[in-house]
Length: 60
Ligand code: SF4
Ligand code: SF4
Image (cartoon, rainbow, N blue to C red; front, side, top):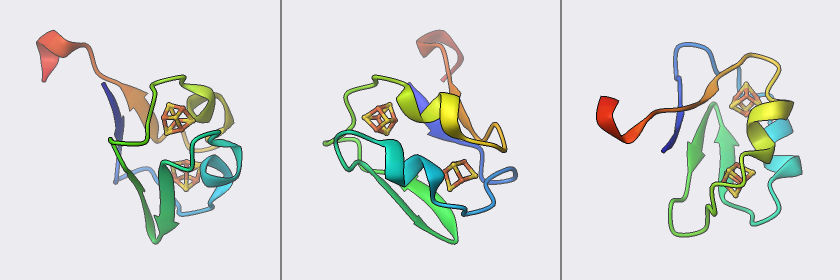
């Protein structure tokens, strides 16, 4: 599951620009709309702060 590490997110909005489904919002700290996210993980590659991380189901 994709989550935002709020301690790392700088609110730059880059992930918002690259998300193909419009699932991300960055007002201060980034948030994910799970209904819209298809877990493509494109955003993970673009985050300059490594704030978007994938948690294995077993660690949740
Ligand atoms: S994983 Fe894909 S759909 Fe989900 S927030 Fe990131 S870019 Fe958007
Ligand atoms: S790209 Fe990374 S640092 Fe920038 S708003 Fe998105 S999650 Fe936060």
